[in-house]
Image (cartoon, one colour):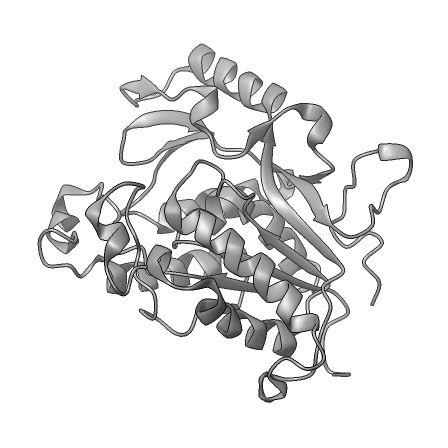
Length: 295
C-alpha cells in the first residue's frame, strides 16, 4: 500500500454528469493537488433525455445507444477535471439507468433501482479495498431530489463502506479498509437563493428559471459542515459540464438540463459530514474534506 498517494478521495454517483454538476470543482482541486480521485458511476444514464436534436436518435425510445455515447462524454469530462481513475460499478452496463421515480423502467430486471443492495455493494467494496480512500462523497438518503438511482447510489455507497471495513467479509475482495469520513452532497439555501437572484438579474438565453427547491440537496445553512472553494477551478468544472453535451447546456455562469430551466453553476461546493470526526473546531465549516481524516 506504500505506493498509494497520501490523500485518496472516492465519489459515488448515479449517472454520467452528476459528478461534474455536484463535485466538478472539488474533483479538479484535489486532482491538481496530487490526491488520488476515484469516481464510480453506477449506470450509463441510458434513460436520459437528449438535448441536441442531432443526437436525439440515441435516446432509449429510439436507437437506445445513449449509454455508450455517455461513456465517451464522461471520459471527456474527466479529462477536463484531471481525473484519471473513473469506473462504472461492476463494469459498464452492469446496472441500467432506472429512469425517474414511478416509471416502468424502474422495474426492469437490470435497472439499478431493482438491484438488491447487497448484490451491488460488493462491486464497490472491491474498489474501496483497492483504492483505500480516507474520504467518500455520495448523496443523502433522499438522493438529493428523489431519483431512484441517486437513492440507490446512496444505499450502495453507505452499505459498501460498512462491508469494506469488516474483517471477515469476502477476503478475496482485498484487505479490510475503514473510510474515515463520509460526506453527502448539499447546497446551502442562502447560496442557492443568491445564485438564482444573480441569474434573474443577469439574464440568460434559457426560456425559464428553475426554483431553489428544484436543486438537489438544498438544506439550511446551519447543516453544512464543509465548503470547498473551487473558484480557481470554475473553468474546468464548466468545461466538464459542457462535455456532457447530451445532458447539459452551459451559458456562462449558468446551465440548464433538458427542461431548459436555468440554474446557477456553483464554483463553491458544499457538503454535510455523515460519518467521521469533524476537521474544524467549534462547529466551524471545514475547508478541506481530508481535515482530520488521518493517513
